[in-house]
Every structure is written in structure tokens, then in C-alpha cells.
Amino acid sequence: MASQQGKKRDNSVLVVGGGVAGIAAACALADAGFTVTLVERRGYLGGRASSYLHPGAGETIDNCQHVLFGCCTNLVDLYRRLGVEEQIFWDDRMTLIEPGGRRSVLQPTGLPAPMHGLSGILRAQCFSAADKAALIWAMGQMMLREQRAGQSLAQWLKAQRQTEGARRRFWELVIASALNADLDAIDVSYAQKVIRELFLNSAQAGAMGMSRVPLSELYAGVGHYLEERGGRLVHGRSVRGAQWDAARRRWTVDCDGQSMETRYLVPALSFEAMAKLLPAMPQLAGVEGLRDRLSRLTHWPICSVHLWFDRTITELDHAVLLDREIHWMYHKSRWQPLRSGEGSYVELVISASRSFAELPREQAIARALQQLAEFFPAVSTARVVKSVLVKEVRATFGVPPGIDAIRPDAASPWPQCFLAGDWVQTGWPATMEGGVRSGYLAAEAICRSQGDTRKILVPDLPPTGWMKLLA
Image (spheres, rainbow, N blue to C red):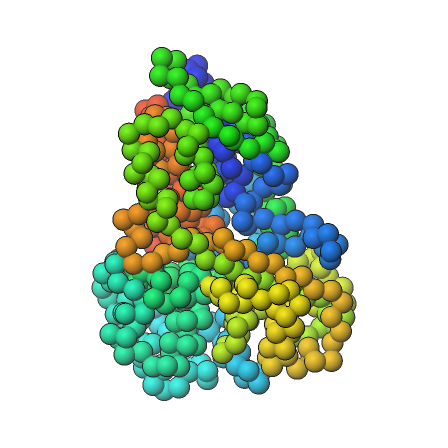
């Protein structure tokens, strides 16, 4: 009934930005009965989680490998809305490889949580007995009590007397690269969230998912989805500014010289793009405060090296690579049907490394190849058919100590305007899940403004086993 009443009123919404936050807001609002226009300046959707045809390689590649986990309940919900949930390849194993090839596998067992995940650490050969004791102690602290926000992960690890091996091979690699920042630039509360979700709460929460298709193909049906619900998708237009008409309670938005009127406005942009848009928005009370918050956010780079070999270099689907600059190997020809055939297509990911991002292309690729051969000897005899280096210099926003005091919520300084983007306060770091959550929260806020109290945000997965006692 609320949706039908909304349709009798003006229920138009303009969502600016076709990243996962904008897609989530647009789809959720369309399902709630709003007439949605989604505007994206590029010719494809996905934002930083997108793919494109690389002119030099002649291949469609992702701008960086993006993964999800079972705990990403809202991202999974968005994929279900779009009918692409079957395009996700799931794996509950994490293989850690040392230079020279020795492997350790972290995989859940049938034991109740949290022992399902901790047992893998106890069996891992890459950790010494002292490393394992240190890790179990630290995880126990994160399991039993909430860690105080505002303290860096580096400070916390020092207080927990973590060994060098535990620090280098687990905290710096698995956790810091997952959050894409150095240890001293991570609020310990966000590290705790990663630990609890990926290793403690449940086996389902820690399962890793990867797209079987180039990322932008996951969003190929968004335009049709909106059209079926009375909305539309507009490509190739940038928003230059917006004016608020208080008498008519409507927005007039300048999209590259074309005016679009709407009742509600949802800027779903990166924090840098939002900061650039501020001068062209009404200068109301609160704008200066938002400008200050945006100026205090920072970004971190991610580099990826795409390599096509003339032969198979490993039977693994993916792996964590220890003690080198390259951190993660994704063997995409193993689980993307369009890559099937002879040879291997792998993507190597280097997280939170500004020094690697500064390397020239040829030097970066050569270094990655040299290091990859230390883990997989077949690389030394394989021929590289083609290679691509991608530098995403603004891949993620940082989560340093005190970040939660900076992140704004969905409410904006303007009437009938709600913010979305992974940097908005969601309780999650810079992830696709965080982006979708922000879009759903903006959609909920618009629904509430019309008296519709529906819940769009999907609840977290509940803890299982003994972790239920600590919920």
C-alpha cells in the first residue's frame, strides 16, 4: 500500500553513480515502487568493481580482482535480485604458499565455531609453534571482547606480543591486505570484524566467492531491471550540479547541460567525486562539515598484474603468496568459462603498496614474474603470451584509527538527498559489501520519508557453534 500511495505522489529518484552503491540503491528503490533514474558517466556499470576491454591485450579484464565472502549478505542479496548469484564461484579453502613451494591450507572443519577455523592455523606449516600460540591468543582476545576503536592494529599487535612470523605472514598479509592498508593505518576494530567474520563466526561466513564472468557482466541486467519497474538507466552523462526548489520540493539536476527533475537525489559517488560536486550544490548549513569530513578521508592503491601463459602453471584456483610483494594469485582460467583452453590466465594482486604502484610497467611486470616463479616452478619454462599492469591508485578508502568519527551516515545537508558509497558509515571497510549496504541504507531512508518502514538491509549471518554464546 505504501508503494502505491507513493506512486500517486511524486516518487521520482535520481541516483548518481553506477558503482555497486548506486546499483544497490536504484534496484532497492525500484522494488519499493519508486520511479528511478540511474545516471552513470561511463558506458558500463560497476565503478571500481568493473571490467573493460583492454586495448593492448584485446582481453576483457577486471580493473582489479574483487572477491566476496559468505558474510557479505547484502552483496549476495543484490546478486540474487539481478539473477546472477549462480555466476559466483565459491571456495572455502585458503592456500598459503611459501617461496620454494611449501603449502599450508586453511580450511574449515566439522568442529563447531570458532574451532572450525582455528584448527587450520594449528596445522599450518608456514607458522612456527610460537606463531601459532601468538595467533590463537590474539584471536581469542578478538573473540571474547570488543576491541577499543581508535587504536591502530600495529599498536594492538605489539600489546598482544605477536611474533615476527605471525605479524608478517598473517596480520600484514591476510588482514592488512584484505583491508588494503599498513598495520599502523588500520583501526583495530575493523581488523576484529575481518577476523570474526572470516575465521571465527561460521564456516559459511568465511567462504570466498569470485565472479565466473568479467565483473561488469554481473550488472548487465540492471537497465532491464529498472525498466521493468518503470525506471531507466542513463549512460554517458556526468552530474555538474543540482539546485533545490524549496517551494516545489524538487531537485533540478544538471547532467552535462540536460536538466533532470526529481523529488529525491542519491549521490552514490566516491568521496573524491563527492568533494568535487560540493561547490555546485546548494550551500546550506552542514555542507562545510561534510566538506571537512571528505577532506580527511584518504585512499590506498591496489595494483594487479594480468599474465597469460602458453601452458598451465598450477592446478590451484587461487593462493596467498607469502614473503614477497605479490600477495594473491587468482587462476582465472580455472573458474571463468570464457578463459577455458590451453594455458593459464592469472591475476596477481599487490595490496596497499605505494612503492610497487610507482614502478614503471616493464619493471613491475618483470618483478612480479620473477617472484611468481619462486612459488610455481612451471613459470620459468612457460612463455608469457601477453601481460597487463593495472594501477588503481584510488582503490579503497583508508580505515585509520578514528575513522568512524569522520564517516557520515546516509543523511546529507540537503533535503530529500541521501548519500551512498562505501565510505558512508556502514560499519564495514572499503568493500563491495560496504557499497551495497550504503545503497540499501539510502533506500531505507527514502522509504521512511514516505512512511514506509520496510527493512531493506539484510541482517548479518548469525554466529554458529560456541560463537552463539558470545553474540
